[in-house]
Structures are given as C-alpha cells and as structure tokens.
Length: 530
Image 1 (cartoon, rainbow, N blue to C red):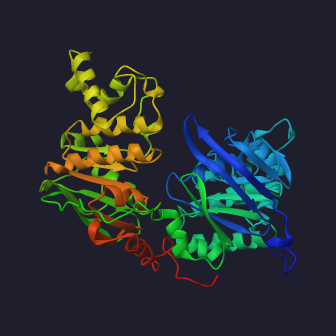
Image 2 (image 1 turned 60 degrees about the vertical axis):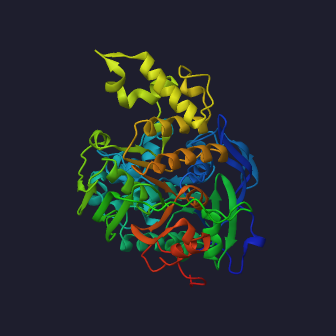
Image 3 (image 1 turned 180 degrees about the vertical axis):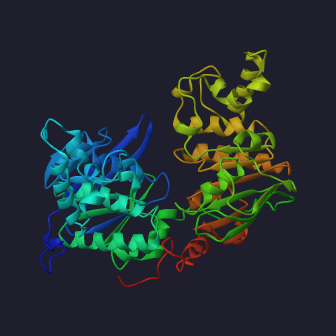
C-alpha cells in the first residue's frame, strides 16, 4: 500500500528541492540545443514538461538521467552538486527514468520477475548469489509499491507476453526500486488506451502523495490538466514558461508555439494555388482518428502546423511512400497514387526532406557533392562509375541557389554548420525538380538567415505553378513566414484551413483551443478542476 509522507499544508515555499538545475546547457559542436536551464523539482509535485519537437525535452531528460554527461552548468541532488556521468550514477542518487518506448525496457526470454530486478541481474558483482526465488521475492516487493499483487505463476512467465499497459507497470516498478527521489516519465501513455492511462494516473497520484517528485513529459494537454501541479515549457532549448495550477492554457500555447515579434506583419505575398497536385481521401492518420480529406495544390506552399501526436509526420510518410494508408486513398495529378516505397514516390516526382537530418538524410564523412547526388546515382553515373563533372555541377547549383557556406562541393559534410547541412538536404531534393516536395520540420536547428533562404527557395519552386510544397512544422513563426495556406492539425483532425492573409496568430491558437473536447490530446478549458 502507498502511504503519504508529505505533511498536510506543506507548499513549495517550505520544501527544499529534490533536484535543482542551474544554468544547464548542452551543445553539439556549434549547435546549441539547451540554453541556461534553471529549474527546481520539489517533493510531492508532478511537473509537466511541454514543448514541440526539437524543443529540448529529450536533451534535458538525457542530462538529468545521466545518459548525456556532456552538459555544462550544475545539477544538484538534495543540495549537493553532482556530475551525472551515467544512468547508473543518476539512479544511485535517486533519479529514475522510464523512457517512451516501453518495449525497449523489456528483455524477452527473461521472466517478468527477472525483468523487474533487471538492474540486480546486470550487476552480478553486487548480487552474486541471486537466484530465481530471490528474484520472485524482490519482484513481489517492487510491484507491491504500486498496489499490484501478481501471482508467482505470472511472475515466472516470459515478460514478452505482457500487454503494453502491464509492461508499463513493470518498468515503473523497476524504476521505483531503491526509493528514488525523482521519477522521469517520457510520454508514458503513448501506447495506452484511455482506460489503461487512467490506471497509470491513479498510480502516479498515489506516488506523488508519498513525496516522490515526478517529471511528466507529454503532448496531451488533457492528461497534464488532470495530473500536473506545475507546467514548464521549453522552446528552442530555453525555458519559456513555468506556472502552477490553475493553468492559463492560452499563455502555455503561446509560449509553446511562439509569440509575435515586432517584425511580424500581414503577409502581402500570399499565393492562391491552382490545380490539385495531391489528394488525400478518407485516410485516418492515427488509430483513433476520423478519416481525413485534404488537397495539396500547385503554385502554393501549404503549411501544416501541429504539435507532437498531431499526425503530421504520419501524413508526410504516407505521401512519401514510407507508410500505407489503413483505409481511403491517395491520388497524384488526378491519378491513383499508392507508393509502396520511397523509390516509387520519387519516380512520380514526390520527395521528402525528413525530420531528422542526422539519422535520415546525411552521410557522415562523405563530401557535400556525394551527399547531394546519392539519390540520383543512375543519373550521375555510367557503367557504375560516377560522372564527377555532373555530380559536381549539381552540387554547385545547390550551393549557389541556397547560399551554402562551404569550401566547395568536395568539402566534407561534417565540416558544415547545422544550418548549412540542412540547406544541402533541402537543396538535394529540390534540385530534382519535384512535382510535390514534402518538408518535415525543415527549419529545426537553423538560424533565421538559413530559414529565410530555404523559405525563399520553396517560394521560387511554387512560383512556376507546376509544383506543390508542403511544410510540416510545430512552430507558428515558421509557418506564418513561409506558408501561403495554413492547416492546423490536432489529433489527426483539421481544425483550421485558411490562407495566410486571412488568418493570424490568435486564430491559429484558437484552433488548438477549439480542440479541447478531443480525448487526451485536447486542450482543457480554462480553470478545469483537477
């Protein structure tokens, strides 16, 4: 049974923080991804961590959990500054983390009991005499902290047989062994049903009441309204917002999506599209989402704005041949379109600039020219030998058109800044003269100068009237700057579809707020009770 250890009447003013961050920053080369983060996490409090893709949430979690020791600044546990150089050290000092992919925390072939005490099994030097009976006893004790009484017959079964919700409870029980002071949960309900999620919430509330400090990372505002005592918003690696309940959701959304700048003004260069280049008909983007109908037109940049879990990456992957629709159909240029793989899409003139350039788009150690030409080897080679002149010419065209700062086509891609690497990736695909260009978070990690150069190239592409461009983003500023037509996507549903000169920031935020009745992804109304 879980019992409370927080005295009644205690508040943040009288409690000392369990974990404190002071001036914590993280940079990868010239790319600064976390800047001067200062936060306190108090006992008996659930802190919700919010932010769009690339906001810095994962980077912050890695620093706190010891997974990334390359941070500057101070992290203190109970007032003592420590350098968290590994997850083992972090856990030894009371910081436990449950990562988003629960399946990654389960070892098939081992019993449920063995998975609960996996840390002990991995450290044979500390537990050399451990046997299955001891594992059962310790597993039962760990599960009992969650109010679970699983029989020995179940604990002896292969952990791979557990449902996703029970696997979630298993890794949570493991994380709670050793009585942690801070528990970090990264999107813990991403694979749970509503009933399973509510079961988890009951456990978390009880754990909070024992004095445990919890960091809850989620994009589902309904969950945060139901659980959190405080909301912290990260944007571009900086803490933009911190507030206690009752939460002002308009303010939170503004700080997540970006606030108006002094330079913001009504767009006067908005284009109206011409012919329909791609059509999505009756396609659900997410498992529980209704069927979506959507048109992409030539001669305009369509900006699709959505937070994590909106379905925008799923839509990009469908159009690019990386996934197939569960139902409904796609068409391209008025003809049926059912790509089974990206090469099918490329042959039809559809290209995708993926969200993660480092993992999905770049070839480290290769030259700029090779990185640009790799998808077009058949065009750039003869009898298996690269035509150097053609490859170099294509690369130079990309360098010139996007203002890539580099020593030349033969320079290593590793020597370029993040913004210039992104220009290379965008330029690679635009150099193919696409019929439909899809760009998933193309401005992440690039400065405003690079953003405007890329945006200008996209506008040049649609100016011919023969191509369509779709930019997928979670940043209002980016969408307002580059898009002619704007769609707000929430949980697979179009909440707004308007031209940029017919809408504004307030209307866009209002579209998100208008989705407040939609399940866990909804934004709750102001002042909704806990």
